[in-house]
Image (cartoon, rainbow, N blue to C red; front, side):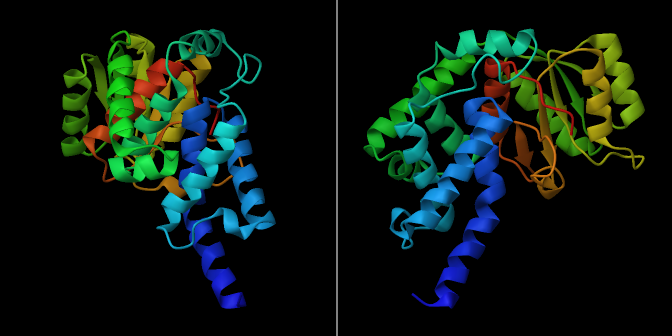
Length: 270
């Protein structure tokens, strides 16, 4: 095997690693658990390169190894001690109601934008079974209680799209804010059950700072929606469990909202 070929694989994996870590955190409900599975995936590939199908699309091949490791470990989610607060404890009770395979299928199809055929290959199941799991996962998430949502977004068209998606899912929009100051004021007044936040706002202020200030006052799940995911997926500090990259698809937002409300977990300070 040439050094060039080895380098090509390493480069391909490096490009997909932020998305693998995002998936792991959303799947397990814990940054530490998700990153642990991502690290185990890389270790498995380093120990035996044959575990990854180099003829497949790199992202799909990497996720296939991740899924094999997660499944063989018992498809674990975060333990009650992994995150603090009443939302995390409630999340563990809620997780008992959702089949792990359905959660995987929905996340792969919506958050990571794999088509049904790719989902089936990653999970090593028939395509019709993957389709059924996705449908079952959506049905379970649609049964979640309606939430009041704060949208922190400075681009009017995107804000309108998010409002439409939120309301179509049966939730209500508590407020739409385009600066840190307005977002914090709205959060304090409305006490939303969920926050959708961009990270770069109209006046040059930071959605990250707004979220940290909000979470210092009360707990709520947060989904970051940004054109700059690399600013959050650095591996150098606590990161959000739920992150959507612009331009986004409605299915991605729907999946992230369902997962965030299902897990009920808050992001760590970012």
